[in-house]
Image (cartoon, rainbow, N blue to C red; front, side):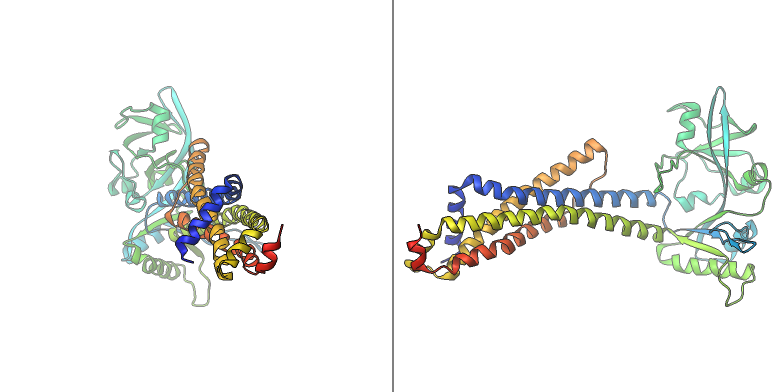
Length: 407
C-alpha cells in the first residue's frame, strides 16, 4: 500500500472520529505550546541580560585590588588598598593593547539646583571614560585631559539626574549645580543607558574628573577601589590582560611564585556566566513544559489502543483482502504521527501567541526562534511515532481469523 493511500485512510479515520482526534491533539497542543512559550521566555531573558551587559561597553576589563588580611582574617576581593593612580598611569604608558583606562572614585552625594535636589552618586573618572564605556554625551561635551590635570569642577550628568533636577527636555549645559555645597558647572548630558545587569539605574550618576572627586570627596586618597580599561579590539583582550597583569606584578614587586594581589574581570566572563545561568533556566523551563508533551504522548497511546480495539473487525477485513501486517502497522503509525504533527503545528501557533501575551501583559522579554519551532514539530512527530508504535504493532500482529470473528 502506498504512503498516499495510507495517509488517506488515516485522515478518513480521523474524520469519522473528530471529537476523539481533537481531544487526542489537545495534549500535544498544550505540550508544544508550553515548550515554545517557556523557551521564548528563557531566551528573551538571556537576550535582555546580554543587552544590559553590553551597555558596559565592549572589550571592557575591570581590575580590583586583592583581599586584605587582618589578624589572620581574610577580607574579600577589593578589600585591600594596593592599587594606586600611579599604577594606572604606568599601565596607560606601557600597555600597547589598552585603548583607554580610568580609575573610579565614587561617593554618594546630595545635589542641589535652585529649589530642586536629588541624592545620587558622583563618579570620578578619566577623560578616556567615554572610549571605555562607549558612552559619549548627547548634549555638550565630556571633560578633557586638561580638566583632569587641573581638577576642574565640571561635570557630566546622567539622564536621571538631569531630569530630576531640571525636568525633561530642559537645556542644562552651562548651568551650575551644588554638590555638597561645592559648585560644579554642567558641560554635558549623557544619553540614556537604562538599567545594568544588576538592575541599577546607570543614568543616575554624575561624572567628574577623578582628580576633583579624589580631592573634594575622597580625602585626597591615592588608593583606587576599581580600574576600568578597554582593549584596542576584541582580539587584543587577552594581550591587554597579560600586559596589565605584568605591569601590576612588577610594580607590586611580586615574585614568580606569589599570587596576584589584584583581580582582573573581563566583560566576556560576566557575559558567559550570565548566559550559562540563563541557559540552565531555559533548559529547566523547557523540561518542565516537556512533561506535558509526555502526558500528551501517553494520551495518544491510550486513544490509539482504544481505536485498535474498536477496529479489530476492520483490521481483519483488510488482512483478508490482502493487507499485510506492515501495512496495518504503517496505517496506525501514520494516524498517530498525523495527529501529533497537526497538534504540534497548532501548538506552535498557540505557544507564539502565549509568549506575545506574556510579553505584553507582564512586560517580560521573549524571543521566539525558528529552531524552537522546528524542534517543536520534530518532537511532536517523535512523540507520535514513539507512543503510536505499540498500538500499531499490536494491530499488525492480530490474527485475521480471530479479528473477523471479533464482535
